[in-house]
Each structure stands twice: as C-alpha cells, then as structure tokens.
Image (cartoon, rainbow over all chains, first blue to last red; front, side, top):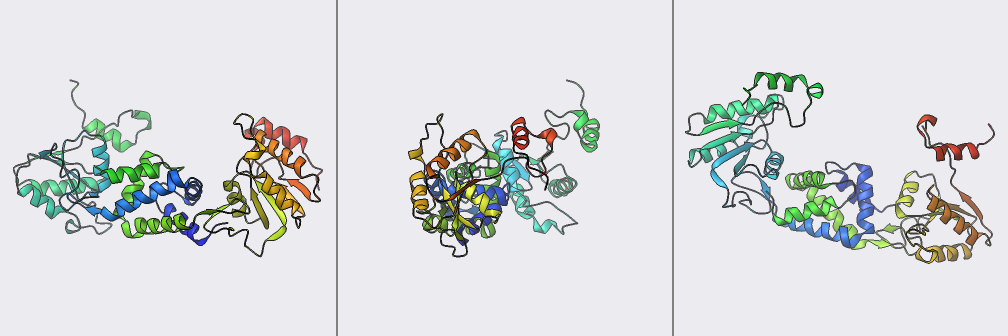
Length: 198
Length: 198
C-alpha cells in the first residue's frame, strides 16, 4: 500500500514516545489526507526547531535559544535555584508556574548500576553557579526514587560548604491519593514525615 | 520554559490522532534531546512525503506517486476490485495482505444526515472503471454501519447492469468474540446469517 517514503515517515513517527506502529500509521494517513492543516504546519515547525535547537550553556535546558528563555527571563528570581535530573523535570515544574526562580539540569542521576558517576552529570557547573554567589536557596528537586535521593544526598554534601539554604521537595501522599491504593513506600514515608495538624 | 517555536511544534504534533497536548510535549522533548536519531530523520521523512504527496487519479489512494503503488503493482489481479469508503480502510485491508486485487476509494459514505450524496463520492469513476471491462468481481467492502450498508446497496443497484459478480464482506462474530460481550446487532446478524456446519 505504501511507498518507501511513507514507510520511512511511519517509522520515524513510531519512534516518538506515545506513538506505536499502529498510531504512527494513522498519523501518517492523517498528515497525507489533511496536508494543509497538518503536514505543512508540522514540517515548518520541525524545521524552525531543528534550525535553532540548542542546549542552554547555563542551565542545560533544551530550547531554540542559548541562553534559554528561562535563563534570560528578567522576571525570575536569581536567588532561587531548582536542581532537577532531566529537562523533562524542568518542563514539568515550569508548567505548573509555581517556581519563580532559575533551574539547573543535571542530565541524569547517580547510578552505580548504570555506571553514572558524579563527573557524568552537570555537577561541576552547578557548584560553579552556587560558588559565584547571589543564590540564597537551592531546591534539590530529584525524583522520589532511590537513585534520585542518593543524588540529592550527594549534592547536599557537595553544597554544604556554601552559604545557601538547601531544601527538597515534600514527600507524602499525592493529591487525590487514596490510602487503599497507594504503595507501601509512600504510606511509610507519609507516616514517617507526618506533621502536627495546624 | 519554551519558546514560541517549540510551542508551535507542540501544537502541530498535538493535532495528530493519538497524541494529546501532554504526549506532544513529551514527543517534542524527545525530539530535541535526541536530535540525530529522531528529529533529523523525521524532518527528512516529512519533507520527502510532502514533496511527493499525491492522490492516485485511478483509485483515490494517497501515496507518494500517481498512479499509486497498488495500481502499478503488476502482481495484482486486475479482475478483482475492492471498493472501500476511506483510504484508511484500503490501508487496513492491504495490511492483511489477503486481498490480491485492486482498490477503489469512495472518499466517504452516503449520509442523509451529513448531506453526503452520490455525486459527492467517487462513484462515477467507479462506474467508469467497471464499464471499461476486465473486472470479474467487485467486493463492496463498506463498513458494517447503517450508512456503510446503505452505500453498498446503492452501489449494488448502480452496478447490477454490468457483467460482474458483486460480493460483500461477511458479517458475524469477530474472531475471539464472546457472545456474552457482543452487542445485540452483531448477535442478531450472526444468527440470521447462520450457515450449515460443514
């Protein structure tokens, strides 16, 4: 049914997260049938991003400019720095629009299993940013996983000599979480970190 | 977090079937982080398809050549013609590799509700193909919906003057179908169309 070029496009789309071979095929058909409203805009948007794609040399975010839009946003608070594992985490936190400061992307987490050592992550540049001064608080926003928390502890040790407040994200029940459906780890942590009723 | 260009790309991707705003964002991040293995191939594949995209003037399939790969495939049987509603149906049937003949895409189905009349569909070109001769059997492979079956009946009337065998897809229990979970319509049809045990 389909030419080599269509197969190539289907395979390229199927490589995206969230799309399998079947949905990629539906997407290709959609693109081909509604060229003006879907294929042409997607092609133009991809080209624009491909031309300008860059990794921010300051924070590690991927954007179409370097420094990125967050690092150049003058409304943000320079004294607040949030450290995350991945760019996806930065985007997730930034979407909530709850954090008014800057970010720093490590590019991963320490992992003995996967052989990820401190020198494989953007830790030296983090230390340099903190050492340069002007930062009051560093939020260690690692994932609530064993490796994420190991990384947070390591960073806390590396940063304790600097005059900054080190904080971490709260752990406990997620919003809407029902005790009956939550895993034991979350329950045990929620219990251990319980607070007095205000 | 994201520039105007990234937003535009996210919106273009979110317009594809199977991708929502959230998965489009993940896809964009994936594209930007793994440029060489994802963004560049996707861009090249889209460009190739965009350059060559065409609708087959014979059967109505969308492909990167006109006539399409199916119409030019010399291994196919010219005497067998399968009529479908949409290009998606053609692709679905062709994927199964069970039909060795040619196709004809109507581009929709008759619908009083949506105001789709015979002249809105590729029916004249179908009649012309059959009238040209060389076809032994026309398979009316409409969807098993009210409108699909109405369209099949209409086509059967239009084609009955030609010396071709008119057939339709079998209706009944789908493979793996359990009576307890099937709708009444399917059950009633499966009962009505019951066959002697071979």
